[in-house]
Length: 439
Ligand code: ARG
Image (cartoon, rainbow, N blue to C red; front, side):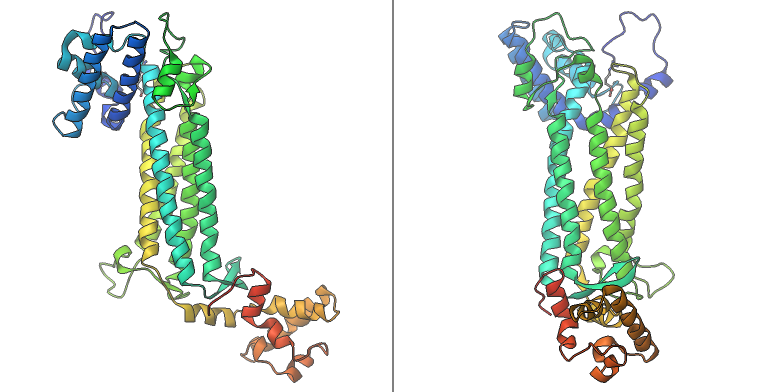
């Protein structure tokens, strides 16, 4: 069923019809399409382009279609080009010829643009809620596990931190992710409805009215830009890519920490899987899948950029390709945030193992050097002295804080008894990241 055909002599090939149809994937825009159409028809009545009575019939018809879809009485499938054709055709079937007036002073080009913006805005807000939830899980986990942990650079033990401090780094990253989404929504928040196909309409329409009705800040300034702007999908896909990169880094840490080599955490059975051959295995599949799925979100970003890069103004059918890529990125990032929240809620921290790793890692070596500096030595010289002490400890299977003062004095006469409290892990933490620790 088509909304065009008047100027065609031959029927469209079935192959082309299937190739051209977006209904399969733009069906998820049904609600936004109806909301956009309702705003449009209200405006048509306000501007005397249709009568008030006609607009009432169309509005009621659109509501019936929405209800039927939501109650499963009208299935979105069949021989339609897209969701816009589906809604309009079914409206005409529902209320008769008056339904044919809906598309006055509108094109599917501004219609799809407004549908996508409405959908994107509501989903972006949903994502922010999911991130809030994940941040809440992270804060709880942090509060409950304010315990010593090695901090790493180059994946080598470097300085002492706490698990709380480490995990709260992800809280900060997610905070930036939220701000980026809010900013992207702010930029997209202009209504393209009324731009029509590309150059507006000869009818005296009111774009301010529809923009306000649909909750946009204002109508877009330029019609050509309004119908062919997909920046917001690219920008949000970039925001999603950053979220996925953050989740992927966290996943990588969870995978490492749950290995026997680290043995810092246990991921709950609810978010782990087993091996079909090796009975002892408990695999961190949830974290691995999140890490893996970051690739497809980046793929969508590159795909969207590539789709748009060569398009002359204004609308081109290439732009229909925005949907599957964007929807896939959206669905993926949403499910990954939810799974990460679920998985982190099951996390058990092995505080004792983390503490042992701190001790064995010479994580107070920098502080020993700082101690010598506090006694008047230049840092570079102190660095050399402490390097020799670490070597000595490794050869004698001990740690710096367990050396006697006599042993320390073999390396430098500057060591006094106060060195032990200076290099005590909890004290160094309080001077460094300045966080209270409970253990
Ligand atoms: N399905 C189309 C899309 O997603 C809707 C717009 C069609 N416009 C047109 N001039 N054929 O882009």
